[in-house]
Amino acid sequence: MIDINKIREDFPILSETVYGKPLVYFDNAATTQKPRQVVEKIVEGYYKRNANIHRGVHFLSQEATEAHEQARQEVRAFINAKSSNEIIFTRGTTEAINLVASSFGELLSDGDEVIVTQMEHHSNIVPWQLLQRRKDIKLKVIPFDENGVLKIQELDTLITPKTKLIACTHVSNALGTINPVKEIIEKAHAQGIPVLVDGAQSIPHFKVDVQELDADFLAFSAHKIYGPTGMGVLYGKEAWLDKLPPYQGGGEMIDKVTFEKTTFNVLPFKFEAGTPDFIGSTALAEALRYVNAIGIDTIAAHEQELVAYAVQQLSRFDNIRFIGQTKERSGLVSFLIGTIHPYDLGSVLDKLGIAVRTGHHCAQPVMDAFGIDGTVRASFGIYNTKEEIDILVAGVERAKKMFKQ
Amino acid sequence: MTINEKQDEIIAEFEFLDDWLDKYQQIIDKGMSSAGIDPKYKTPENLIEGCQSKVWVMAEYKEGKVYYQGESNTDIAGGIAAMLVEIFSGHTPQEIIDTDLYFIDRIGLKEHLSPTRSNGMLAMIKQMRLFAIAFKAENENK
Ligand SMILES: Cc1ncc(COP(=O)(O)O)c(C=O)c1O
Image (cartoon, rainbow over all chains, first blue to last red):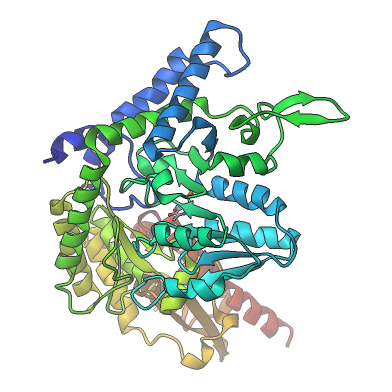
């Protein structure tokens, strides 16, 4: 059994009040709150280990370098990558996907095809569209059904000899659907096609083992797993990362620079131009340690319980419409009540101290598929409780009356 | 009633409501009881940019006075539109242009709306004033 009250004490923000009401934070899919341990790691980094890394001969620089590289090791272990050469630090999921779209994109030729799903976050759609400005590639889409479940059988017809990559979210941030990425990867690999997994919404919620999945690339954001903002990870199989050209140019990523010819550094540095966020990396490692101390499986079980409870409690409203109704669901509930606009419902819940997300959740094609403007999304984290869900349900009840539904 | 008398009336309605949910309720009810906008005016031209909610506003000029219609796909923005329509309708362009909309601060609307909603409200007001300015110019050119 986990002691939620003890965990909540680690997150000072959870004892804040908003409009005089206790904060109920259900916007964890957007970003999670930070435990003291993570914030203290950041402070300690600046107070005790602040020096630019990798090239410094002096003591502090060596300390900072060691901490940064140790953090890389911890990230490696967290997702069970083979080597820390496969862990590239980025600014977040978005930058990680842009890196792949840009560098992998260099390997593509006109006429090649990339497959995504209909439930991608915009950050796994737009980078490919930007690539389309440079190359005449085709973007194909795996659709989902009325429950928000991928029609994975369509993959067989979508894949052609021209397919060069499948980029697919592990968990939909709008629907909560857990996609069968392992199956997708198997199908893709059978045709020699690599797969990029957007792990932004899976990494914080359940065990993800990149070797077990056999993913070629996987992206995630630190801020969604109790870590700092502006920090993220791209995992890539070493064989692939070796093949890709660099993403950005600058310091760190070079081996030797002359005006005639520049050679690039080895992995992972080849993809890390400029001074990296060596404070953020150690804070991310601290967040992962925090998660490990509780246990990712324990977190998954707790959140599954919350999701099941939320669905059960919200089902009492006869005019509720769940957007995304899948058995394989992680971390969140997306819904509408009668004809109440999600923005209105969110505004009323806000005044009750309940932070939910409203709108399209950066997944407009998902909203289009359901013919709606947006949804209200309650997304959970390790510190949330059933009592908070009761507060949400009471808030919805109140809003329902206010909007005469 | 003058524009300011109408503003004072709205202030009086809100004054005794100290909980913001009650104020929201008042706004929602205003929207729900308003006549809205004739569906034929729900056109892209009458859609106000800068609102996260969709808001349509149109105006007619009759015998020297401006008459507005407004509606939103959300009830809270719809209520705000209804209040503005109520305040401005039936007045001359000059009166509308000269109005200091003090009721907004007095009932605490701006600081209690989310920034996007607040911007949306300002966009509505701007659009309504633009209608008045256009009618005034039209009138003077006659
Ligand atoms: C599925 C998914 N992909 C990508 C992102 C983008 O993450 P970031 O903004 O941290 O780069 C998000 C964040 O909302 C997400 O939920």
